[in-house]
Amino acid sequence: MAQIEGKVAIITGAASGIGRACAIVLAREGACVVATDVDSEGLRDTEKLVSDAGGKILTLTQDVTDEAVWEDVFTEATEKFGTPSVLVNNAGIAIAGGITDFTLDDWRRQMAVNVDSVFLGTRAAMNAMSSGGSIINISSVAGLRGAAGASAYCTSKGAVRLFTKAAAVECAQMGTGIRVNSVHPGIIDTPIWQKSITRMTEVMDEERISALTAHSGANQMDVEAIASQSSPMGRAGRPEEVAELILFLASDASSYISGQEHVVDGAMTAR
Image (tube, rainbow, N blue to C red; front, side, top):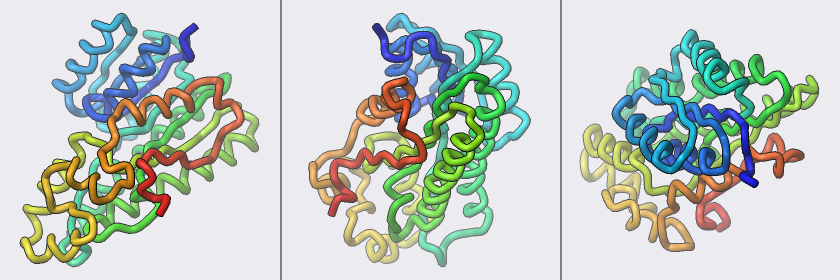
C-alpha cells in the first residue's frame, strides 16, 4: 500500500528542485498534490511529470508572500481533493552578498519569501487541518551555522528552524494533532545554487568574493565542485534524497516526531 494514500499535500516552490521532487514522490505514494509556485512554466513541467506517472495534481500560481492568496490555496485544494493534511513550506530564495554590500530592500525580500511565507503557510494550515496533519518547513544547513556571504539567508533559515519548534509545541499543547518539523538540506543540486552564485558575482568584485568563499569554493559555478570540498560524501545531494525524507515526515510512520530538525547534508555538519 502507498505510504500516504489519500492524503492531500500542498507543496510550495514546486516548479523545480526539491519542491518538484516532493510533488513527484508524494504523488507516487498516493497523495493528491497541490503544487504552487510563481513560475507558471515550471509548474506545467511538474504537472506533466506527475500526471504522466499516474499521479493526481493541481497546480496553482502563488506568491507565497501574499497573505490573501494563502486562504485561496487551501480553499481550492479542499474543493478539488478534500481537506489538506500535509503542507510543505518549500518556496525560498537565496540572495547572496557580504553584509557591507547588502541593501535593506534585499534583506527584507529575503525575509519575506523565506520567513513570512512559512508563518503564513503554517497559520493557514493550522486553521484548515481539522483532524491533524504534518507541516514540513524547509530550512537549510545555513539555518544551523553561519556562512560568509550569506548572512541574510542564514538568518532567514535560522528563523524557520526556531519558528518550527515554537509551532510544534503550540500545536501539541492545543491538541490539534498537527506535527511540525524542519528539514535542513545541505548542498543539493537545484537551481537556487546557480541563482545565488550569479547574484554574488553581480554585486561583489572578484577579490571580495574570493575572500568570503575561500573555504567553501562557492565562487565556482559547478555545484559538484562546491560539494566535493564541503561534503564528506564528496558529492551534491539530489532533490529526490530530500523528498524521500519529506515523505517520511508526511506519513503516519513519523506520528511521534515533531519540533525536530532533520538534516540531509552528506555529513557536512557532522564535522
